Length: 364
Image (tube, rainbow, N blue to C red; front, side, top):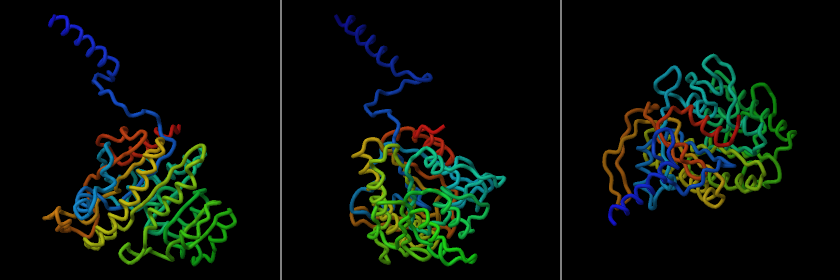
């Protein structure tokens, strides 16, 4: 009898494994749907790596939202011409799928414009959004809509944004639109394209394309009263886009994580990390409810060489130290949640994030 039970059990295991065998390896049976997402929300913590995440987890009174993700990868951030990247090159790699030179935006190593994931989304009928706690013309957001060999050509970034059809954008930098050296008033250009242009999120009607300028130049710190502009703007964009037939793509940047690292200011750093993570929570909550949304959370590079020297989880404090006021070459984690999230497991170059997103949205 034992012999027959063994034979039946062996056949059952063989048949089960054979059905899931793929490229020479036995793939575990999973309950998660393999359907591709209709929507993608990409959240970039500028300057965020594992040490910043670990410290924020320690000082938080509850688990970080990004740590709700079951699917985790690691990306390498190096630029095409430098071991330690800047935000322009790293954001271009993620937005456009090519490693490029330091201090360039949306172009390849020869200066030829690349097509970004937001431009692909627009051409495929998806709604698009960009929001940042920096200026809207800064390196990371600009890499998703602009093309330039100089990331600091802010007035040109602003002009290029008016040529695009981003449905909702929020950030600082209004002066690059209406106080320009060439005398142009790009606010008028946005109004002519039927944008609602406002200075506060409470003024947003959600009835048309929207430009929200929360500061004339750089937005202030969270601890200086900036408020929950990142999470609130994401909520507004999601509510505006959620019933659109073809879906949406949104990029959210927690920009001042990087600035805090530049200044070697741990308290500033932790406040910006927790602010960013609240926006992550908004994205994951929606993905849980919607069932057809992919959320990706990552950094573009590490800033400050931030190290954890000691800490106390019971009292929610950490003792950190900085090695530099510049970026470093550390690899950074990639967290993914929702439909298609398992495709982000592994170790890969930052440029692969573009191709993974492109494949998940079914773009050719």
